[in-house]
Length: 254
Image 1 (spheres, rainbow, N blue to C red):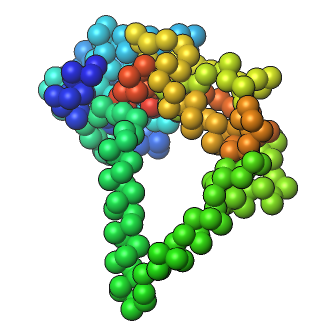
Image 2 (cartoon, rainbow, N blue to C red):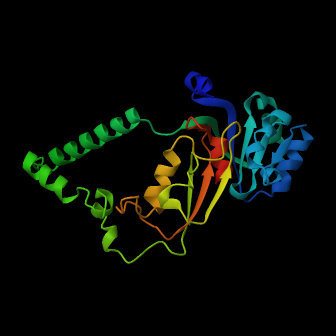
């Protein structure tokens, strides 16, 4: 997938948003009338990582819960016939399916740079003065890590909140999760894999990192860095061991 991703931003397939007011049966009967073979995602519930077979064995897949379909783009002539067979506005919108990837260090730095520039422009726009070096250092000291909490917990004032996330279900769609991490020990974690040719665990670390921030509690030294540490955690592996995937994998996870 890495070579494919580097060559193109799109997979060559089409993502279709279907009109929820149109009965599903109408869409499938229209597809059958044009010899367009569309699979149900529910057919792959037991082994969701195998849903990509729908693009090899047929012309695409329909995600029932979110009313979205992804179809092979080379079947554009078939899509034209389906549009004619269906009631008007059965397909609300369509767009190319994309390759997706975890954020890289360079992506992070670009975002950080753009954020700083936006702040400076806002300050100038309102005729204010940009904070001095001393003021920035004071702010940094205010939100520095302590032995009990990370800067993020302090900056968002989580440590002062009585909410723990108990009774809340949080889904992390990423590269999976490392359930053996010290912070995840003893937690009930539901996991599913939605990509082929990948391990069941988090071989990359990005998903575990995100899960720790959202649902973790404290690391091995006792420093708290997680927010909703009593929430129920659902981890869908929608990116492979290289941190890459497609829109279809994310939709499957949803």
